[in-house]
Length: 63
Ligand code: FES
Image (cartoon, rainbow, N blue to C red):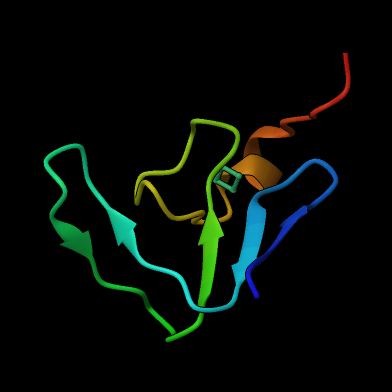
C-alpha cells in the first residue's frame, strides 16, 4: 500500500513501496527506503524533496 499525506502548509509525505523517477525515467534515490517527503511549495533547493524552505518562506497552501 502507498499512502500520500498532504501536510498542512507543507510537503507531501509518502510511504510505502514507492519509486521516484525523473522526466527521463531515471530513478531518484530515496533518502529513506519506503519514505519520501516531496516539496509542494516549489521553493526547495533539493527538489523533488522538501528541504524545509516552506517554513522559512511562510508558504501556505490556503487561498
Ligand atoms: S514543501 Fe517543503 S520546501 Fe517545499
